[in-house]
Length: 309
Image (cartoon, rainbow, N blue to C red; front, side):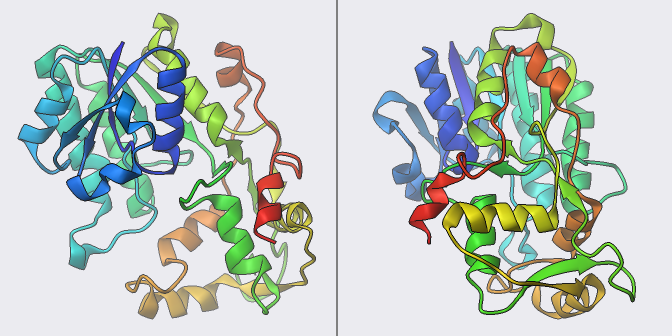
């Protein structure tokens, strides 16, 4: 099957390309010329030079495709540089959906995110808008909403590695964030990390499963963990120890209000909001549908952190 992938040069994109090739599909990627070197197995893929902001480039990339995977996503935006959630999560996705309809590439898989909602942060809202637009098309669609992703970073930004570098390796105590004025339930918000290989596998399986059409699948790992537990598991996997202290998220949001426009500042107000909301779901039905047993978030599956320590 000829599958056009938007967002094939990033962390998840690399795993998608691996899985597509392993299952005998032919990936077609829209890439900026300066990003060609980021494509895994590029000698086995068709690369189309262009940008998601160009309707013509998107049409060329989709021409002749049997299916389309839209996997473009950013964790933070920089409006002054034209990098926005609106442009990449929604406008780009809508452009790809319209082109897929025109080209007759009826199968369309969308990478969304757990916790998306109409009245959420900019990240959540624009992912939700893409989902809603997809439902209005004639495409045979499937939406996936993963929780936080972990797995070997392979030179990209990855959840566990970033927390190890930014928090475990920091000389400061690990922050156990809490809302309000008193440190009640500090660091108790929960997440259900899911392995990136499992997510890539589900995407590719869905291409050949008519029963997956028209469904939104929540993809979460088999267990949820508190923020405190996640930091300890990461430290244990890297062979490190880490002290932790309660930290008022309101104070950090105040600092972020001034500094999160700059790339050097590690976290934004929206990211803090989503962090405190937690990121859990029941992924059992999804993985049961695809006949898979998701990998647990444990020291064995985080052994790649030993190279960081």
